Image (cartoon, rainbow, N blue to C red; front, side, top):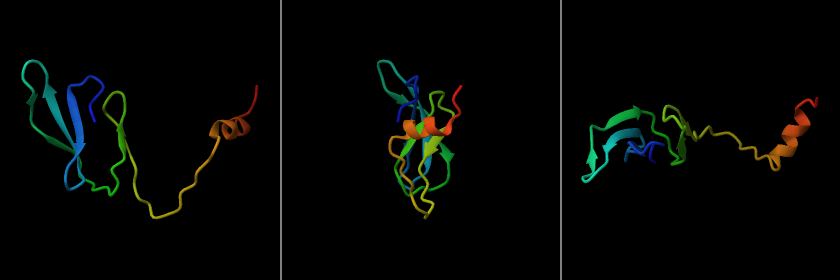
Length: 83
């Protein structure tokens, strides 16, 4: 996944670790030094990067149940106090 400014590439290594590599664009594609961002080995491939590239949202297998809320805008309106 690319950072918003296109100067950094985030990816998962074969071991499942989250990695980052700065990229220089231009005539030639240059990948600089790779660094490990997160040593945890998540079993799932799903993740996303915040707009500023400083935070990551990752799915973590908790072993519990999953609750799916359909039409959650309606549910949110029900829970929030009205003015």
